Image (cartoon, rainbow, N blue to C red; front, side, top):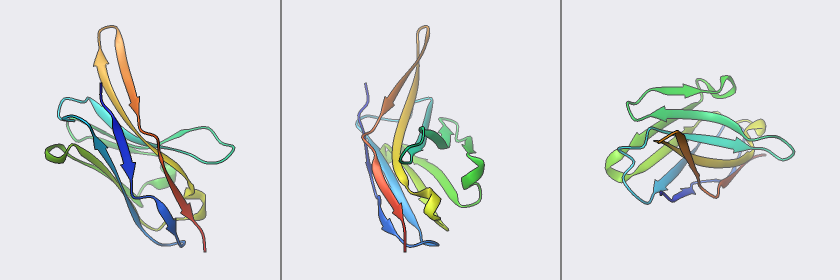
Length: 119
């Protein structure tokens, strides 16, 4: 079991930056992968960025070059640095942790943090 708490969301103007944090209730050292997802009003939840325990990262095409995911195992925290924000980045951002279990995997989710990009 792992509880995830996101923070750092808010209102920002287009072109601005925000850094989201996801604090885990236990060590993330052994968690296979962590990721950020987002869900905009009326749309399905989508993967924004992911990072494996080995540090490999992947990004949605829409955020490549603007967003950076990182993890600090010592602080049990994953970050999402978001630069050059656009109105279409407006969404609730969710932290996800995936662990491998017998027969498959287990997903854990935070409650989300709202990011609003607007002038």
